[in-house]
Length: 103
Image (cartoon, rainbow, N blue to C red; front, side):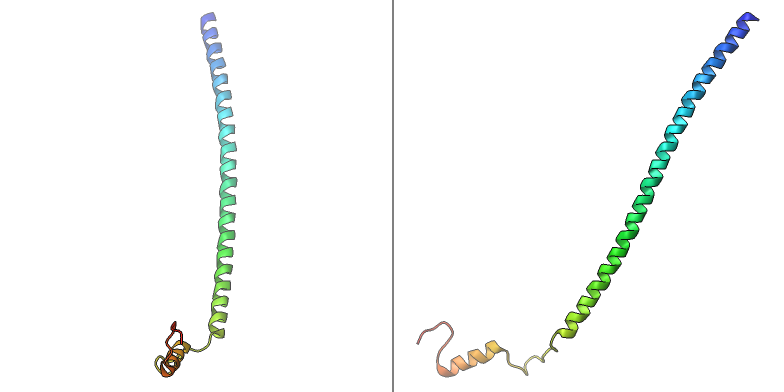
């Protein structure tokens, strides 16, 4: 009976130590989980903010592009309007002076 009691006491001590170790591990894992959840929530918030910034920048770029196109002169038809370089070349040819030559 004494031996059985001693064996049961030893098993109880071992079970108590094991229970303590498992409770510590559970507490550590819960802390890790809370940390990961916070990191995930932060990442989701940052992704949402980046999405909003990107949408805003796209809208600004669209507005800028529209304003630039509205301010640009209408395109000229090719062949009908002479460019300044063609006009200068024809004038130089008529007078006998070519670009880069000295009289």
